[in-house]
Image (tube, rainbow, N blue to C red):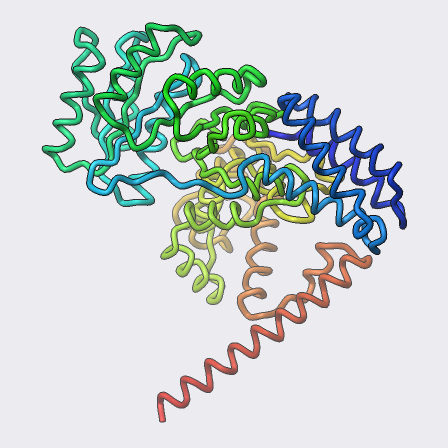
Length: 478
C-alpha cells in the first residue's frame, strides 16, 4: 500500500501533539523535524520537503493555532491542506477535443507499464464515457509489444490498429488516424516506444508523432517504484514534449509513494491517473484531497463509495434487499455478494478507506487471507443446487460429503454454515429495522453503548419511513 510508512510516521508525530492540552512553538518545531524526516524517508524531493515544512511551520506557529482549544486538530488540518496543495489541489480531467476524435498519446520509459495503462484507460473511457476508442500499436521495437496490446484489446473488446513491425511508427499513426476518422472512433489512444533511458532518437521519433497527431493529451507513464528517478524522468519528458499530465503506475507496490508528492511540485504537471493493481479496472482518477486524507490516516469514503457504485450491480442490489426482507437469502446469493466485494479490491485496503478504521492501531497489520475466501467458495461450490437454495436441508451426512468434496475439515464446514445462518438472521433483522444485538458485536463498553444508541436511532428512522410509506399508499388507494 502506497504511503504506508509515511502515514505511520506522520501519525506518530502528530499523535504527540494530541496528548498535550497546550502546544508551544518548541513542540511544533519538534513535530516539523519529524515530518521532514518522514517525507525524506518516503523519497519526496528534498526541495519539495523544504518548502512544505516551511509553509506548515509558518501557519502552525500562528497565534490562532497555538491559543486554540484543539491545536493538534488545527495542525492536522494545516498539514492536510498543504499536502493537497503540493499534489495539485483538485483532480484534473482529461481534455476533450471540440470534434472527434480526442487523441491521447502515451509516452514513457520501457517497463513503466505504458501499454497496460493505455488499455486500462481505453476500458475506462469505454465503460464510463460510453466511448468507442481505438488503440494504435506504435511500439515496433519492444518484443511482443504489439501482441500484448492486441491481446489486451481482445480482453476489453476495444479495436487495435497495427501494421506490424516493418512499418515506421509515424506511418502507423498516420494510417491509424485515417482509420479512426473513417470508423468514427471518438477516442484514439497511441502507444509509443519506450527506452531504458531518455535519448535523442526516442525523443525525435516522439516529436514527429506529436507533430503529426496533434494530440489533445500527452500522458507520461511513470513507475512510482523508481522513487526520485520518477521525478527526473518526468522533468526530461516534459522539457522535450510538454506533457499534459502524468499517470503513476505500481503505486500499490511502493510503500513510500514520494513520487506522487514530488511530480506536480517539480514539473507543474498534474497527476491525472494512478494505477494500483494488475486488473484492467485498476486505474483511478487522482484526487489530491482524497490522497492527502489517506496519507494522514483519515480514510477515503468518497473513493470507497465510487468503487461500490462501479462494481455493484444495482439490479442485483435491489433483488438482494428483497431477499433479505423475505428471509430467502441463500448460498447462491452469499457467493454472489462475496464475488462482488472481491471485485472492489483487497479487503484490508478497503477497510483503510473507512474513517476511524484507517488509523486504528489494532488494524495496523490487518490482512484478510485470500485463501480463506477461496476455502469458503470451495465449500459452497461443493453443495448441490438444492443445498445452496435450501440451507436448512444440510444435515450431518450432507455436511460430511461437502467437507470431502471441498477438501476442508468438517469443523470448518460447520463453522461456515453457522456463521452464514447468523449473518442471514442479522440481515433479516436489519431489513425490518431491528438492530438489537448489534451492539454485542461491537463490544459492551462505551463504543458498544454508543453503537446501540446510534443503531436505535437508525431503527426509529426506518420505522418512521415505513409509516410514511403506508400513509402514502393509503392516500393513493382512496
